[in-house]
Length: 165
Picture 1 (spheres, rainbow, N blue to C red):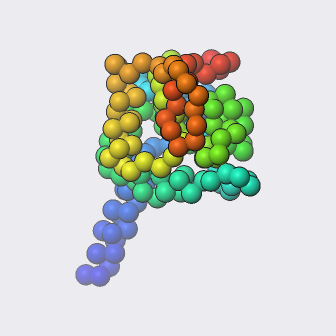
Picture 2: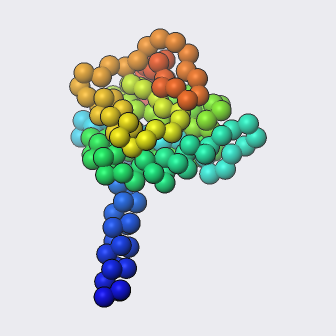
């Protein structure tokens, strides 16, 4: 009986860990998004934090938010990409996630690679799922306006300069 309970618990934890299906190639994911007309979510993260960077929010997102069923459901509207900043400096810089005190960011884009919003801080699962749904909606438009600061959503959007799907 204990083996059955442990097996069920292990299976449930494995399902939670797979709430988001991550791609690892920006080019492949952009092509996939264009062909499926899905929005794009790029999670730029760091494995370790250089001096002056606070990446604790990234671990909290990975351990709590990304494992949520609500976030997993919202992620079905996206092609999701997980890229380490150090190995993808050019893309991280292009999308405003290289030299920010948060150490990275989560960029939401249209299938045409128009940046809709960027998040640089921890968000609880229900709030993050709402942000995902809003960014993916047909009514969501690319953001324009003021300067982005760590911990706030981006208001400086537009298309990623120089990248073609």
